[in-house]
Image (cartoon, rainbow, N blue to C red; front, top):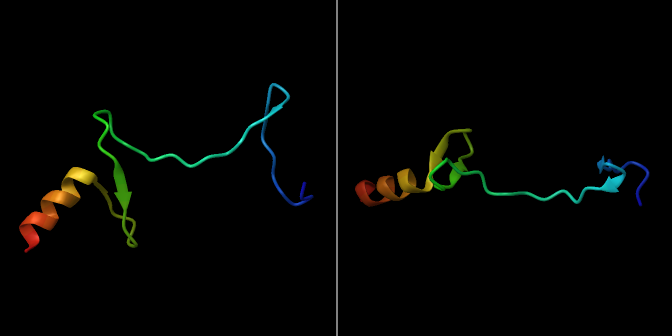
Length: 52
């Protein structure tokens, strides 16, 4: 264990941190571009199709 590492405990048990994909209530995944703009996967697919 690293002394500078932050550890999370819940009820005395170590919580293993993990990243998950954010999505809306319908299950459509969110994506963030380099400018911080948030779009759903459906919006990105629509923009790709109509950008050509």
